[in-house]
Image (cartoon, rainbow, N blue to C red; front, side, top):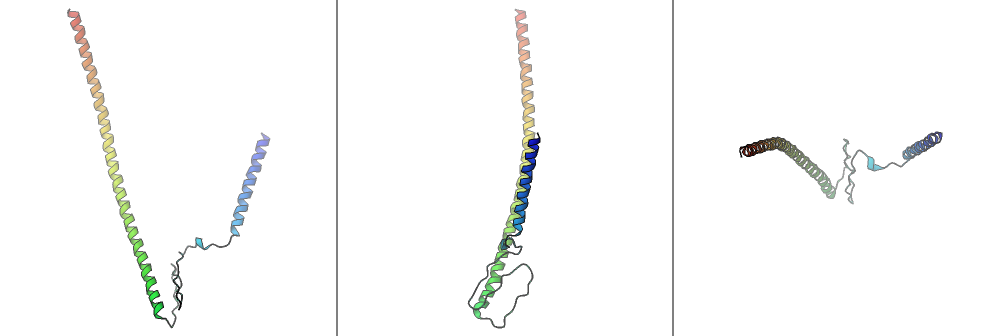
Length: 153
């Protein structure tokens, strides 16, 4: 008994120490940008200038004094793509809401049909019981008729 308690305590202590070592080593890991709260967007690079990536935090963009026609095209293309993506997301959200509403409607219809099924099943069970009772009555009457006929002969 003492041996099992001691071995259990040793195993528990070893498991806790390895857990502690793993969490301590996780703190020394290098920073990974994958876990940022701000989404990572690809920036479009041109020969003239590079535009910074847009973030959800409100930032004041730096305006340069001299811009070429190629950077103007890039500047107008990036917000257009962003608005297209936002509109696509809004359409997907709308479609998802419609599908969820349809799912709720289907579930309601299913529950109605299920309730009707249960009621019909109970009615069926009662009718089957009535049929059996009636058949028993008929058999008992037939048997009494036969007994009476035998007694008359």
